[in-house]
Amino acid sequence: MRFRRLFLAAGLLAAGTAWAQDNLRYIDGGRTLALREAPSGDAELVTFVETGQQMELLESMGENSYARVRLPDGREGWLAARFLTEQKPAAEQLASTREALESERSRVTALENQVEQLQGRLEQAAPALELADRNAELEAQLEARQAELQQSLKAYDAEVARQRTLITGAALVGGGIVFGLLLPMLTRGRKRRGYGDL
Image 1 (tube, one colour):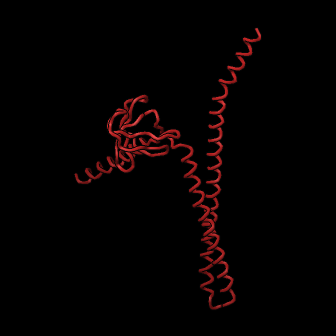
Image 2 (tube, one colour; image 1 turned 120 degrees about the vertical axis):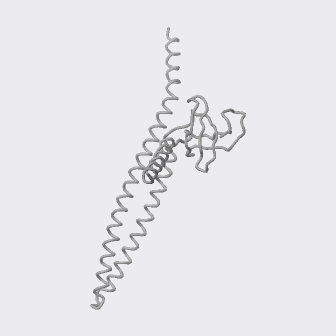
Image 3 (spheres, one colour; image 1 turned 135 degrees about the horizontal axis):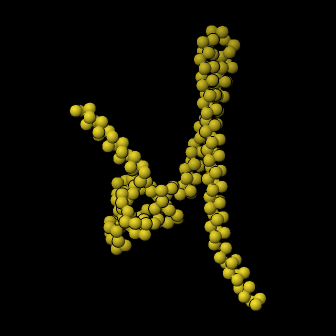
């Protein structure tokens, strides 16, 4: 009986965590929204939330109405549902990728320094026969650091490739928006010329 209760509690906890992950939302586009205590523009202000702010969707009154959300600090409130998206904004993804890339670069540099230090210590210890055991230990450390360096270099290359993909995607989206804005103006100009030729 006790085991059954523990199993049920663990299942409910796992389901709640999965539900929270599935209901993560972000503010779309470059904007700041008012989070209010009730689904009304006149309701008491809780705080302001900006693009990239992560929150949990608790309920929605429809895409063109209000949604109730919970911020990471536990505060809850209502805001315009149409500005919520499941995808983290591209600018935020790019910023986090750059941070990860910088972190990986620092790690690679630190590992390269460690490898150089170990190589220097190994060279100093080589002539002394009585340090044979220490040399074997240093060689093992050197191999371990070199393997770690190779892994970090692979991770670094993967982050670079990911960042390039994000930049290309952002450029394509931006180009599409500009083209979409210019196309109606170009089409209007052609129609006017066509009427004038009659």
